[in-house]
Length: 180
Length: 180
DNA sequence: ATAACCATGTAAATGGTTACATGATTAG
DNA sequence: CTAATCATGTAACCATTTACATGGTTAT
Image 1: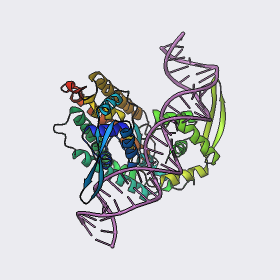
Image 2: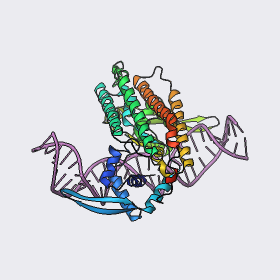
Image 3: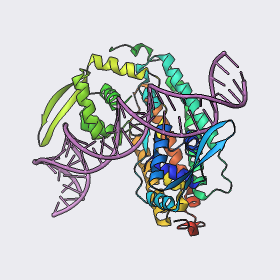
Image 4: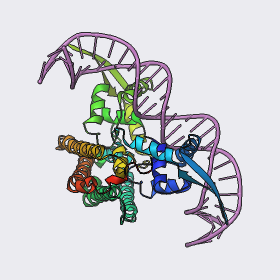
């Protein structure tokens, strides 16, 4: 499963442009479990077009750049279903912020506080994003996934806020620079 | 930050072989916030060696293959601290299981149940892994990160178990195959 | 017997990120 | 006036994953 599959999935929710799909990843429905940038979305859309899995309509707008709106074809839907029937691979997580917190005794306290604070902000924003997704009338899968994201993000935000003193306490300040 | 930095971090906790470092990612201390396989660990270790950031001792064992134990150098520690002082990039998450749950109305109910069940197992195992990390006497950063992992994994496991009926209800069964 | 564990590595292929390139409009 | 938003795309670079290659030991 790659960006191509996710674009297909995005289009199964309705026609969209690459720009609009990007927003689903960065602050929309997909934000808490997958991500993709323009550099992978636009090429993916073009390959899907070549393979006949989507069609494209150019839409001219007033005072706005040209927009390419993609729609899924029947073959596209069949391909999406096939992709979704494979065995899922393991979750891939990678958090540089957590790595830095883990080794926080090796960094300066200013940087430590900065990282923690922006990580809290990041989770708070995440909670807002998910809460903005309206679940009413959605299929159960989408409601379920929204609820999961909310539960996880809230738990993280809560933990970070309630325990930040543990990370920020200065006790080990003197360790910094020891072995350099 | 890449596998090289993480290997350096692993070695800051004590000398280790590539095989042992791998275990820190798959079921150990790092398991819930970063991952790396042999294909990236072994090359990383070799590059660190070339760059003088680690040293290597070959250890012969009885009835066991040769083991290469790596140790961090002073330059290595300085490099690690420098890496940890950069701005962290955003968390990267990618969950194919959640994608499949999101689009669960497009897959068969047997597969749906399979995915959900193994996802629950995955989180339960994750909780066990984190609980097996002994936090006593550890620097605050490690305790903090362990607690965060525990909070998040427990929240996910709890949500999945308490709401699985929502995902498994058959109501939309008839949708499957509609548009293919 | 058979699977799992110990232990190391490489090469090719895959796929994503980053930087570049362009440019009008709107909100603060 | 400045930043953000709208909007698309490419090319080089980078990193990881996958498959391949090897082989003894221990637990079931």
